[in-house]
View 1 (spheres, rainbow, N blue to C red):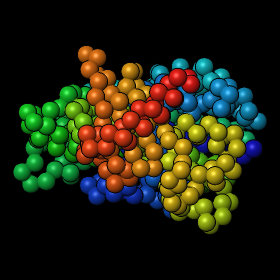
View 2 (view 1 turned 90 degrees about the horizontal axis):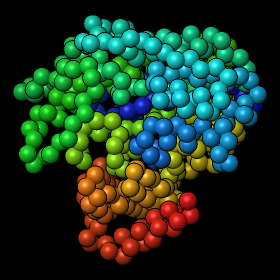
View 3 (view 1 turned 180 degrees about the horizontal axis):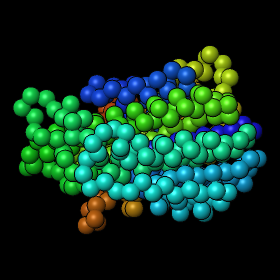
View 4 (view 1 turned 90 degrees about the vertical axis):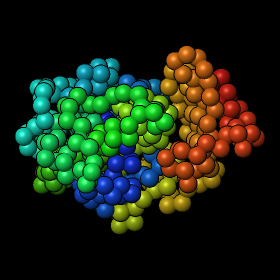
Length: 368
């Protein structure tokens, strides 16, 4: 087995990155990573619950911790108490909690942000890496402090825009597009883009360091968004809390050492869930089974659950059976892959497809 370095970042969804079409913020580290990696355009978190997503990644198909199959030592580094708890259950040999303090105001510079502190600690962890080790780095990302310097936030402010969201606490509130001021979203988006730029910059510095390290340079490197972040498109702003794409559609990159040129700068259109990372850690060559450049119409549907709500996605459709806090349910259907943002609900026009999707959900829930 080879050395593995896994980097999971919470709160980063695919829509935030340049290689997935975001022209508002430059993300050279993520974009550059794709040049020497396999990038997965249709990767999704299996849930919007942090614990559930990490547990899916850290267990094999039989439900056993992946750490039991690691020949070297297994090491977990994180700034997130929930992630630390999951790592303890997964029986890592070494668990390092990162306490970087808590800024009450925006950082004066990018190098003094929470992200900078985390990736500095991650760099220290790499120094102890040996052949056949597993190093898992979990960063709270956009669910932690929004401490990008005010000047950076203002760089995303257009003429006549409101002032950027200035708080350090990640924004979390309900948003009604019919009643609430759209400037609320603009202000949040400006600060969100600044925060994404900070994460991208610190990730880039860290990845450059890996290339200079004798062991890390020969490692399998996986970089994945853990969950997304809602920016008002479906009634809320805040960490992943529903089954729409902004919460679940995440970036995923796999860099294989000494990979053939055909597996570099390759964008896979396979429909996958990020829980498969655990399987890839045990056998990196299985990554090649998921590198089709054209989506297979017969690919297995993806199943999602959040409390009493369910969703299922195929190559052609995304169906959501949602139950709100008052027990009221609704059904939504979106054409895929065209409706990326899931804004055009066609459930009322496609009753047969809705019926088929409901049947798939029933079969899945009854089998569990």
